[in-house]
Length: 116
Image 1 (cartoon, rainbow, N blue to C red):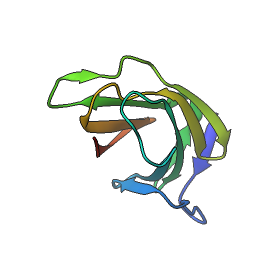
Image 2 (image 1 turned 45 degrees about the vertical axis):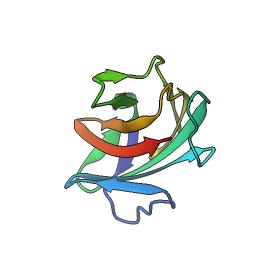
Image 3 (image 1 turned 120 degrees about the horizontal axis):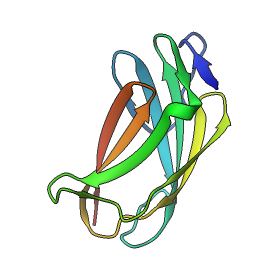
C-alpha cells in the first residue's frame, strides 16, 4: 500500500523529529512522559524526501544498546492515514537509555530517550 509520495506539501505535526537524506519523521507518545513499567502509545508521521513509502514495510521497535536487549513485547503498527501510523504495545520495563528504531521501507532511523 502506498503511504506518501514525495515531500511536496508534506508537513509533519509537532513531536520529536528525526530525519536522514530520504525521509523525515515526527513522533509523539501518549502519555507524553514515558514511565518505567507503564504502557504507552506512539504516533508517527512520515514525509519521504525521495520516492514513496510502503505501509506494509513500516516497523517500530526499541532497544537498550548498553544492555544489548530490546523490549519484552512486540508492538502493533496500524496505518491511520497517508503517512500516519499508531502503534500500541510499548512498555519500557527498566530505566535507562532506550533507542526507538523506526524502519520505513528500506530506511532505518533511530532516536534515543532516557527513562528514569
